[in-house]
Length: 144
Image: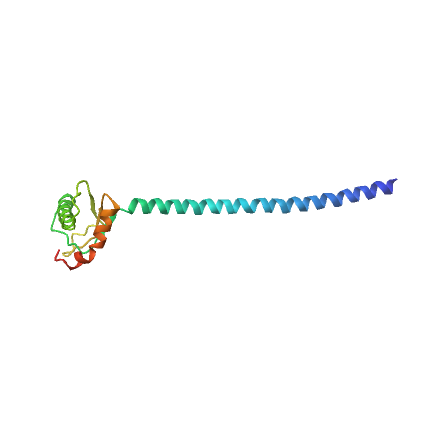
């Protein structure tokens, strides 16, 4: 009878060890999808951020090579740039030039004589952007 109980106890110990091993395997299987889901969420967030960033920038046009005037303040320079951009857009047939967002990119450096910071123009529609891009070859050959 004692021998029988000893065998039963050994059998139960073996079963417990087998169950513990199976639990370890199941825990690793459960944690792996959680990690891949977390990775997937991070990647999805990056993609959403990229799409929203492109959506925000889709109406922007960058104009290079425009010299800056001898303006003393940023407000004066902004007025000069606004007149320049509106003239350029009207020559391309874009007449909706009210409420444009115009700004110079980069840091202002008064020590340079020939300053040519790019101008960022935010237009009202993608169609206006496409018109400007199609006419970019004309703009490159113009005197302004």
